[in-house]
Image (cartoon, rainbow, N blue to C red):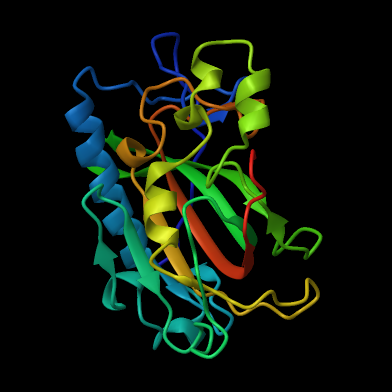
Length: 248
């Protein structure tokens, strides 16, 4: 199976979400948000059926032409947990920190994370519910290879809130992704691995839009895109955590 995320042209009635401002989608926002929630859940499960984890824990799409992945287990066949918010997390076997070195992740920690984070828009196209677009949020794995330090979707600093100029931007929920916060604390951090350490991704977190920004105002993690109605997929390893200084 091969997963292809489509950017589809649309007319003037289409709603812009989880995409570049200069692109147009066929997506039309359901009036009833419970319909979008249902699309999210169906699309996440389909994504889990169509992808697997490679030897380093990277999410990979099954191929229809390469038999080398025929024996790989799809994400939906791996042990996973669904949290009350609808967020799903997969803890990769053999990739967690040893008990002697593991560190508990706390709500206000400064995290150092090797991360590939993507946003996805779920829609019903001719009776087929799936993700119709994808957007890169962070990718330190294929980028400079250095972990991301202190991502705002885990915790936003008080100085950022104090400097905000709109009522919405003064709220932590404008930046933080609830489902990510909830799920990442189910994992343990490594004991401050060196930045240049080879990665071995710990797992996957899949966040439906209702546990992200849903239809609320939000921080433009990529300024050309809207994340309204978007679900998120995080593929990561927590290299370390640190106590946050008082006042941050």
